Length: 365
Length: 97
Image 1 (cartoon, rainbow over the protein chains, first blue to last red):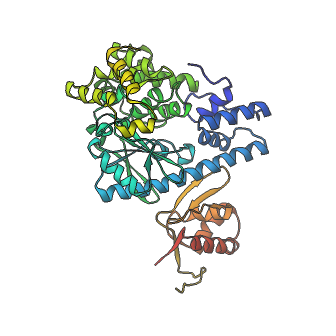
Image 2: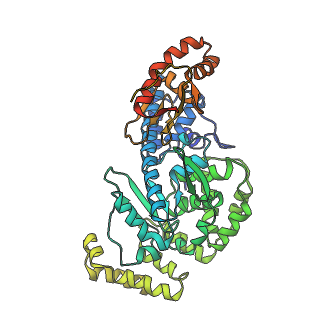
Image 3: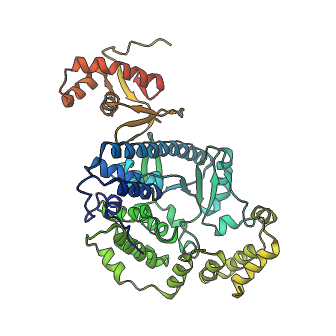
């Protein structure tokens, strides 16, 4: 894993964090500024750039204008998404579907000093696995449509990480059953995600997010099991939740991570955050992360997620080891015999899918 | 529907519930409920929005802003009237009945 080449990007990404790289002392020359803007847009660090500018990072008038335009667009998008979020929350409440807001608006409002410092581009909502179909019905009534059919009837509520839906206005909604892909997504205690919750307010309406320790774990999952290499904003969230305010219960974090077989995820996320953001601040969880030795299962699970293809068959091989026997059969049946509508949507033949599923079980190519 | 004039001394104003807003580097974006319109408030609008964290009359809001702006409250109040009217018309502010 490599740090951004330009220390200006590292400084912007870590702005306000204790022990962060100092902001540049003078305006960047045009080529460095262009590179910074490209990276900020690519990594969705517009909120951090805005904070850096308002905190006194020297910029030319033209650079300030450009940063302001980017921030204006990002905050307009945040408002539009929060409007949709409010409609979804009302509709879920009306339908009796418990839910927790993930990432985006929840992290911006609960974990950053000001929501303007955290841009986001879609909506993520967690619902109980047993209520996923009801939640999909609610979303359908609000105009959302799924990108692809379910792999097999009942697969989503039993095994999927989430279902991604598109709204006619172009934004996406991820309705989550769990916090991350298998294999790690299979070892999370799903009912525990709905124990308690953190309240936050959008437009005068109270919403529920995960509790802080769970938000931290989710940030770690997102950083380590999402895009690879990790997105800088995801690592910033990890550092933000860990460092920016007192009160994160580290014992609870580690207990949950141990119970969910995700200690390697936390260790990896914390170490990567320190490296990518150039942090030097000491922290007990960072010390622990440096010394943590992943279990064999964790090594295999991380390895399949950190390959470029992250193929389902590879993930399935590792995931089978943590599924109860009855669930294994259903999981493999779904992989081996997907529905016709799924296959048609994938423009794929059943035999091709069967070969891939056989390979998942038997280890063939 | 007939309203009291904006400048009526006793009229209190508040942010309308359901209004969303975000600060940007040089502006304040406000979206009233039931609207897709984004209002970009300039400096007087930003100051008014901040002053109306809680319900206040025009005079009270002008006095708060005058404190930090170092300008006479009467002058501030006259500058705020069109902003107040625009935000009410857009549905971002409402009178406290």
